[in-house]
Length: 247
Ligand code: SF4
Image (cartoon, rainbow, N blue to C red; front, side, top):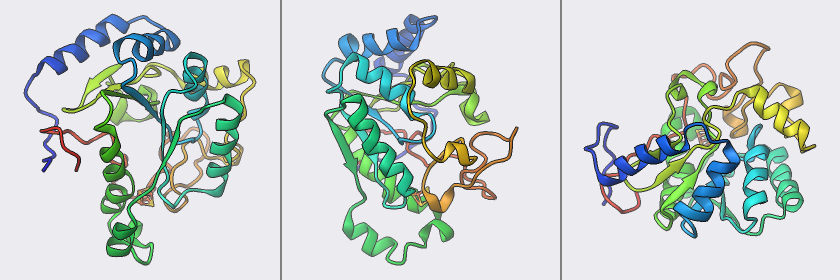
């Protein structure tokens, strides 16, 4: 059994390696970081998790330039906007990605925990847990590292994000940690990449349709996620493992 513990885990050789890699990548651009992580440091043992949301195309394009066979994991919560699913299919085709996994919650969990699809209202943490955290934990144990598109500018909770982290089981590579919203927009424009169709409708951050609202100009990009609630993260980046098992 895996026990989730708080972030104050004891130092391990893996934590030290994460610090050393973060120092090594200091000043490197995102593509160089990815080339080293995918081709050298974690070759054959690294995957990309993508929401196929507002910013996702930049990181997907960078990874596809390096190796189109890199595993890409999409958390198909069963609660996505249909535009996200269409955009996912469009990008996979456009970028030639050959190793996409659509990770769905277990049917028995849907039946037992959320038979009426209303858990997002009564207990969104529990909903994210069985629709996202649990399915992801079941597959990330097969990898040494996973790549995420998180950025420091996105929220106060991400302001101190390291380029490389260790969560007790996996290394997490955040090659866009120091990118701004303008950097993403510039990358998409320079490479003539398609935007998620909901961006033009006021959605700078896109998750499940039940828990995502458009935001006003000048508002925090993630303020439309779980709007009106204390919740700011789905939980997949909060999990810290004490041992090597899935949760
Ligand atoms: S974002 Fe909302 S609907 Fe999606 S898994 Fe989390 S609580 Fe459930």
